[in-house]
Image (cartoon, rainbow, N blue to C red; front, side):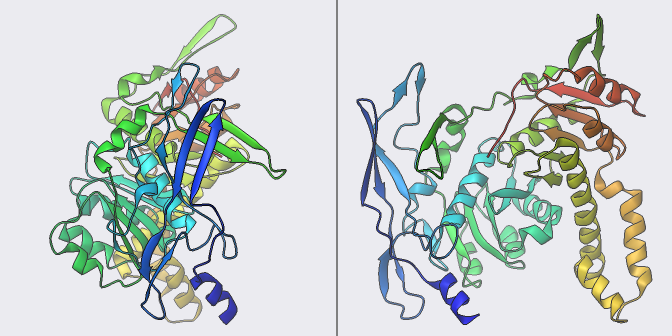
Length: 429
């Protein structure tokens, strides 16, 4: 066990070059490796190292920032230098380095920013764990947004990465230090806030460089490179989200055997939740389905092989996270701790029964929520399982031969549900 702990705390040497050049024909992109001079965890002596390790201990890794080159292929001009955020994090941006950063710490910040770039109009927080969002929320204040995002999935948020879209104030920081996070990142921190956060000595506190340019990334592509087991590469353009406003949604319309099928129009409030959910969807591993309500995620299903299965998993997660939130608010402990105390005879079973009954009545907070899918529904079964939970609006790409069946399912629901198409899918692998 001591050897395993040592592996996690070892900052590896890496043998990747200081500079990296990628050629696309006669065009070149040039990168420089990012390293940091940070105190050694044992001696306190400043050491210069790159990433702690890759996805796992024992994997050497390096972070590179694009510093030169403008790539144009066909009609696409890719992201140019000068937009470095995660790749531009230096010692000054690490207000507290905590433990030396590893690959997953930085990719979590990156994917949170990938979602956050669409969610800047109100105070908002994205909490990411293992490169998937576990809680995302708007709020009237940053503190409220963090509280909502955290309670959306307290369990997964433990040890996660939280990114904020406003300068962190003291009220928000007081909530943050009550929990265990590995990383927090924000555009700025108000006076005295960093000192409060530093009471959590292992917490990595990051000020995101060039946060003011984040919204511009909604309109820019980068070169996305996938490495294969055989040493080969797949190179693609990064996706562009076409749904930036509620007006970008398309009516859900399908024609089958000469009959046109439509749902009722979505209300303005439903459209706002559908938009919020579609923006969160940009950072969720596919196949995915998620549910949102009042600008907050309720259940997020990720990386499942079939669409009805992931819709059901997201419902299960909504119920379990809702019960846990009720338990924590009422008793100050997790639902699983309460179950254990009941088994050990240290708590009254009626406490759990009350929480379970409330969760069933409220259907895990899903009543009145919106459903978002990153691809179309090949069958209506995925839609039906959500409608039974009180879902009132659905967004998905459209384009299935059976779209008319999904529209029928919405019209048969009581009350009838709305549906919109995005006209594009949002796969992320």
